[in-house]
Image (cartoon, rainbow, N blue to C red; front, side, top):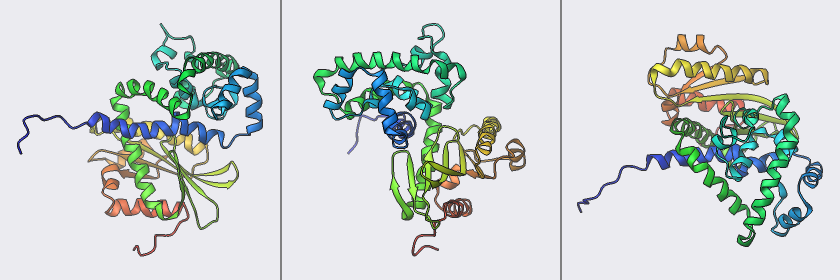
Amino acid sequence: MTNKLKFPPPELQIGFAFALKRFRAVYLQSALFETVRDMDIADLDKQLAQFVPPSDLAAMAQYGLRAELLFAVPAVLQANPFLLGYYRLLMGYSQKEFYGKDKGFGVGYFKNMEVKGAISKTAAADLPDLCAAFCESASFLLVGVGPLRLSRELLDDLTLLTVGPQLRGGANNQRGTTGIVLVFEIIREIVAHAAAEVRESAIEVNSATGRPFLIEFAPDPDIIIREEMAQQNYRNIVAIEIKSGTDVSNIHNRIGEAEKSHQKARKRGFTECWTVVNVSRLDMVKAKSESPSTDRFYSLAALALRQGDEYDDFRRRVMSLTAISAPAGSL
């Protein structure tokens, strides 16, 4: 059958799918749940009682929801500054509208929380005021959507409505995120036989040490591997930077960016730093001089093949550093 109509491949939506997976792990409900699970809930509830009107707390309880799903408090943002992005998206504020110099809300000095996960002294001092403003907006939202019956799904949908235009405007970021998610999926396949739990943003692995290893999305570096020594006490093992750009002329700038990230990772105690690049030709001597902190360079294309010497080296190192054995029947 000959079709007279032909549409182009939905490449934009494919990019969105990869970008959304990592976005969920860093900025959406999955990231919030990961953060709250390690917090002292009694202390969190005390702050919620300080910032949220009793009637709003009662309304959230009526719907079977914890209040931090809608209401921002300092304890949550201090535990994970990236979650400023979650509350901004939930309230429907674009980055330009929220942080903009000309037409913004006068909160541009908080932007590093969302972008870099860092809280400046000025931002830390004003964090209670920021949360109070968010809580006031959240109260309006709670009342406004009341007839629709509030749910986790509805709140997630509201954040996605704001994410859409942001992703559409960031094609380069989408390409980068696609590479990050691909490497994460490759690692997931490698450790699948030893995985105790696979979550949106993390894989927990049963190791020979008896202690779990966590493989996680992270904003900087892109993927990290940590060993849990005790509850909420981790040993940093591997930091992985993925540079998915295919422009050979720009690769050395990207390697320089990876070096900055790895230098910070070293200060945080990571013992291994890897850089994954997506160009067909790489001057290794020059690359190593530009990123001396990188222990291993890998090709994204080689890893994506799931075979060959480079992939085999990556696979062996992932299994070794997470203290897991090869699956039964493998070579």
